[in-house]
Image 1: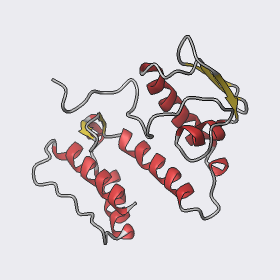
Image 2: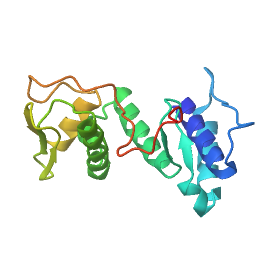
Image 3: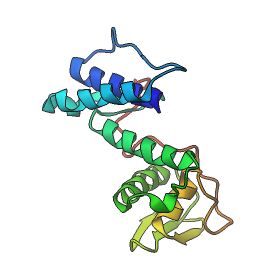
Image 4: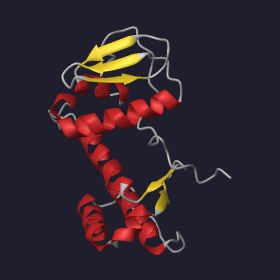
Length: 179
Protein backbone atom coordinates (compact mmCIF):
# COMPACT_ATOMS: atom_id res chain seq x y z
CA UNK A 1 0.00 0.00 0.00
CA UNK A 2 2.86 2.40 0.77
CA UNK A 3 4.32 1.75 -2.68
CA UNK A 4 0.97 2.45 -4.32
CA UNK A 5 0.56 5.70 -2.37
CA UNK A 6 4.05 6.76 -3.45
CA UNK A 7 3.20 5.91 -7.06
CA UNK A 8 0.14 8.17 -6.82
CA UNK A 9 2.32 10.94 -5.34
CA UNK A 10 4.63 10.55 -8.34
CA UNK A 11 1.69 10.83 -10.76
CA UNK A 12 0.42 14.00 -9.07
CA UNK A 13 3.95 15.46 -9.18
CA UNK A 14 4.07 14.71 -12.92
CA UNK A 15 0.68 16.41 -13.36
CA UNK A 16 1.94 19.48 -11.47
CA UNK A 17 5.35 19.81 -13.14
CA UNK A 18 4.61 18.36 -16.56
CA UNK A 19 7.78 16.30 -16.45
CA UNK A 20 8.95 13.02 -15.02
CA UNK A 21 12.56 14.18 -14.74
CA UNK A 22 13.81 14.19 -11.19
CA UNK A 23 10.77 12.44 -9.79
CA UNK A 24 11.90 9.43 -7.85
CA UNK A 25 10.02 6.51 -6.42
CA UNK A 26 10.55 6.70 -2.67
CA UNK A 27 8.89 3.40 -1.94
CA UNK A 28 10.78 0.26 -1.15
CA UNK A 29 10.47 -2.87 0.91
CA UNK A 30 10.54 -0.84 4.13
CA UNK A 31 8.24 1.94 2.90
CA UNK A 32 6.25 3.60 5.66
CA UNK A 33 2.53 3.71 4.89
CA UNK A 34 1.91 6.70 7.17
CA UNK A 35 4.69 8.70 5.51
CA UNK A 36 3.48 7.71 2.04
CA UNK A 37 -0.10 8.72 2.81
CA UNK A 38 1.06 11.99 4.36
CA UNK A 39 2.88 12.81 1.10
CA UNK A 40 -0.19 11.88 -0.95
CA UNK A 41 -2.60 13.89 1.22
CA UNK A 42 -0.29 16.91 0.96
CA UNK A 43 -0.20 16.73 -2.85
CA UNK A 44 -3.95 16.57 -3.43
CA UNK A 45 -4.97 20.05 -2.20
CA UNK A 46 -1.72 21.58 -3.51
CA UNK A 47 -2.32 20.51 -7.12
CA UNK A 48 -3.58 23.49 -9.16
CA UNK A 49 -7.05 22.97 -10.63
CA UNK A 50 -5.89 22.95 -14.29
CA UNK A 51 -3.25 20.29 -13.51
CA UNK A 52 -5.97 17.75 -12.63
CA UNK A 53 -6.63 17.47 -16.41
CA UNK A 54 -2.98 16.72 -17.28
CA UNK A 55 -2.33 13.21 -18.53
CA UNK A 56 -0.07 11.01 -16.44
CA UNK A 57 1.21 7.52 -17.19
CA UNK A 58 0.57 4.50 -14.99
CA UNK A 59 3.43 2.06 -14.55
CA UNK A 60 1.54 -0.37 -16.80
CA UNK A 61 1.85 2.18 -19.62
CA UNK A 62 -1.71 3.48 -19.93
CA UNK A 63 -2.46 7.16 -19.58
CA UNK A 64 -5.19 8.95 -17.68
CA UNK A 65 -5.93 12.44 -16.34
CA UNK A 66 -4.49 13.24 -12.92
CA UNK A 67 -7.99 13.29 -11.40
CA UNK A 68 -8.36 9.58 -12.20
CA UNK A 69 -5.47 8.94 -9.80
CA UNK A 70 -7.85 9.52 -6.88
CA UNK A 71 -10.25 6.90 -8.22
CA UNK A 72 -7.38 4.46 -8.68
CA UNK A 73 -6.37 5.10 -5.08
CA UNK A 74 -9.94 4.40 -3.92
CA UNK A 75 -9.99 1.16 -5.91
CA UNK A 76 -6.66 0.11 -4.43
CA UNK A 77 -7.82 0.85 -0.90
CA UNK A 78 -11.08 -1.08 -1.22
CA UNK A 79 -9.48 -4.05 -2.99
CA UNK A 80 -6.58 -4.48 -0.61
CA UNK A 81 -8.79 -3.94 2.43
CA UNK A 82 -10.49 -7.19 1.38
CA UNK A 83 -7.09 -8.81 0.80
CA UNK A 84 -6.10 -8.21 4.44
CA UNK A 85 -8.50 -11.00 5.45
CA UNK A 86 -9.54 -8.96 8.49
CA UNK A 87 -13.28 -9.40 8.11
CA UNK A 88 -13.81 -6.76 5.40
CA UNK A 89 -15.50 -8.43 2.42
CA UNK A 90 -16.74 -7.33 -1.01
CA UNK A 91 -20.21 -7.04 0.58
CA UNK A 92 -18.74 -4.22 2.71
CA UNK A 93 -17.66 -2.14 -0.30
CA UNK A 94 -19.58 1.15 -0.56
CA UNK A 95 -22.33 1.07 -3.20
CA UNK A 96 -20.90 4.16 -4.94
CA UNK A 97 -17.52 2.46 -5.27
CA UNK A 98 -19.03 -0.76 -6.60
CA UNK A 99 -21.17 1.08 -9.18
CA UNK A 100 -18.18 3.13 -10.40
CA UNK A 101 -15.84 0.13 -10.55
CA UNK A 102 -18.41 -1.97 -12.42
CA UNK A 103 -19.02 0.83 -14.94
CA UNK A 104 -15.28 1.13 -15.57
CA UNK A 105 -14.65 -2.61 -15.70
CA UNK A 106 -17.58 -3.51 -17.94
CA UNK A 107 -16.80 -0.64 -20.35
CA UNK A 108 -13.26 -1.96 -20.75
CA UNK A 109 -14.42 -5.57 -21.07
CA UNK A 110 -16.91 -4.54 -23.78
CA UNK A 111 -14.10 -2.86 -25.74
CA UNK A 112 -12.06 -6.06 -25.47
CA UNK A 113 -14.92 -8.29 -26.67
CA UNK A 114 -15.02 -10.20 -23.39
CA UNK A 115 -17.25 -13.26 -24.01
CA UNK A 116 -20.15 -12.18 -21.80
CA UNK A 117 -23.42 -11.02 -23.36
CA UNK A 118 -24.78 -9.10 -20.42
CA UNK A 119 -24.32 -8.52 -16.71
CA UNK A 120 -27.10 -7.51 -14.35
CA UNK A 121 -26.60 -6.12 -10.85
CA UNK A 122 -29.77 -7.40 -9.24
CA UNK A 123 -29.57 -5.02 -6.28
CA UNK A 124 -28.83 -1.89 -8.33
CA UNK A 125 -31.21 -2.52 -11.21
CA UNK A 126 -28.27 -1.94 -13.58
CA UNK A 127 -27.52 -3.81 -16.80
CA UNK A 128 -24.29 -3.76 -18.80
CA UNK A 129 -24.37 -5.09 -22.38
CA UNK A 130 -21.00 -6.41 -23.47
CA UNK A 131 -21.10 -8.58 -26.60
CA UNK A 132 -23.63 -10.25 -28.80
CA UNK A 133 -22.82 -13.68 -27.44
CA UNK A 134 -21.80 -15.53 -24.36
CA UNK A 135 -23.51 -16.10 -21.05
CA UNK A 136 -25.58 -13.67 -19.00
CA UNK A 137 -24.68 -13.17 -15.36
CA UNK A 138 -27.09 -11.91 -12.69
CA UNK A 139 -25.93 -11.21 -9.16
CA UNK A 140 -25.70 -8.49 -6.54
CA UNK A 141 -23.26 -5.77 -7.61
CA UNK A 142 -20.62 -6.57 -4.97
CA UNK A 143 -20.66 -10.23 -6.06
CA UNK A 144 -20.08 -9.21 -9.69
CA UNK A 145 -17.21 -6.92 -8.74
CA UNK A 146 -15.71 -9.49 -6.38
CA UNK A 147 -15.64 -11.99 -9.26
CA UNK A 148 -14.20 -9.50 -11.76
CA UNK A 149 -11.57 -8.40 -9.24
CA UNK A 150 -10.55 -12.00 -8.59
CA UNK A 151 -11.56 -11.80 -4.93
CA UNK A 152 -14.55 -14.18 -5.02
CA UNK A 153 -15.66 -17.12 -7.19
CA UNK A 154 -17.80 -16.59 -10.28
CA UNK A 155 -21.41 -16.02 -9.19
CA UNK A 156 -22.97 -18.54 -11.57
CA UNK A 157 -20.56 -20.87 -13.33
CA UNK A 158 -19.75 -21.49 -16.06
CA UNK A 159 -18.52 -17.97 -16.72
CA UNK A 160 -15.39 -16.89 -18.57
CA UNK A 161 -12.35 -16.09 -16.46
CA UNK A 162 -11.97 -12.32 -16.27
CA UNK A 163 -8.63 -10.79 -17.23
CA UNK A 164 -6.20 -9.63 -14.56
CA UNK A 165 -7.77 -6.76 -12.68
CA UNK A 166 -7.75 -3.79 -12.46
CA UNK A 167 -8.08 -2.96 -16.11
CA UNK A 168 -7.12 0.32 -17.76
CA UNK A 169 -9.94 2.86 -17.82
CA UNK A 170 -12.35 2.93 -20.72
CA UNK A 171 -12.68 4.63 -23.06
CA UNK A 172 -9.07 5.16 -22.17
CA UNK A 173 -6.78 8.05 -22.77
CA UNK A 174 -4.11 6.13 -24.67
CA UNK A 175 -0.85 4.40 -23.95
CA UNK A 176 2.48 6.08 -23.37
CA UNK A 177 4.15 3.69 -25.82
CA UNK A 178 1.62 4.25 -28.64
CA UNK A 179 2.67 6.54 -31.45
